[in-house]
Length: 179
Image (tube, rainbow, N blue to C red; front, side):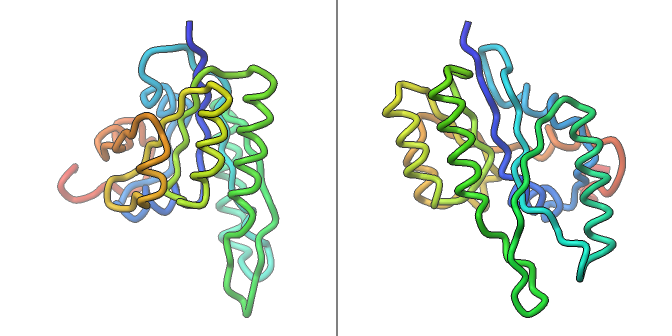
């Protein structure tokens, strides 16, 4: 049976969910199961920068609460320190952390197929490297934000249906057309 690992690019995924008027309060592991198609779910990672407590104490606390819920669902969280430039949070380094995690797990035989939940075109070389290693690669993201580089690199592309997010949302906002 094919083992499928799912790698969430946490910041852009959360932006996509919230930008669609939905809540991140969902069972992320169950959501990942819905993305993999045939196969057995392997590791699920949520990789994102940590929102710094200074100058964002409320956002930091909310992110920590989200991490706690995600971890309870069995998702592995990996974080990287962001840059704050002129009190603006700059999401940097995620591509490196995602690439390192994907390639390390691929080399260690932890999966046969990877589903990457991201719209970052900068990941295209890493996706190609996985394919060069004999791994199957798919990208999943909301259809309105797919970058051309990511649409070309994988063997398949899945559009995330808002209904699949809403079906697993525990609390929080829902778009008006879904209520």
